[in-house]
Length: 262
Image 1 (cartoon, rainbow, N blue to C red):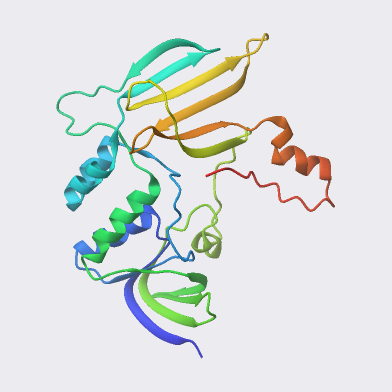
Image 2: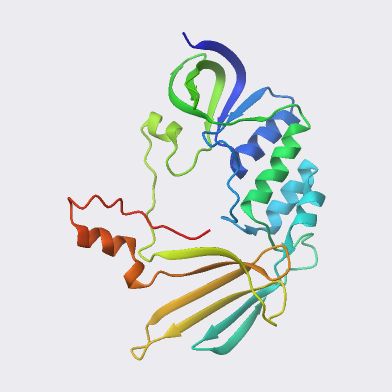
């Protein structure tokens, strides 16, 4: 029989949103638990951009110094078309704005938030998935399971779903996920490059065909470290997962998933 436990708030998902929520709850003295189905943090850059307002929120939390030490300032963007520089965008803000734009890999953001949360004696319960829940006027009873097969029930006043596009919480509530996927497929890579472009600038390089349409695109976002960038580029037709799935047909067994290099 599954063991039964309780807390004020159960947070499902230990990405930046879930970790920030858990940290703010603990700062306010609210008891909470945070669970994530993954056994460890993913080591990829994923989301990179940090907005000035986010840095203000980190300052309020008492975390901004650690974030700024780990991040790289975003100074602007260089634009190229068919190999020729077209212009430069400078990310300049009014002097009353206390912080500028920054770039920080999501894995580092999660690491800093997890360390911060640990100051309040709360850690992530990893390899733990939400498999179901039932709500009543007094709260929510959630069913959790671990990869080892252990199960538990957690009674909480609130259940918060921070578990992404395939959220088990949202599905359990019967809520839809508005929006859709980009029609284009992209390859992603976190790389080190040797070039003489100014540091702190993103790069957007486009190629236009004879018909004037953009038929190739490369976007580079600086990352902390020497010559490190998150690069994304259009998938060439011969590597397109969607085209391979179409060619395979309904019985081909393709999953239609775009595979990227991280």
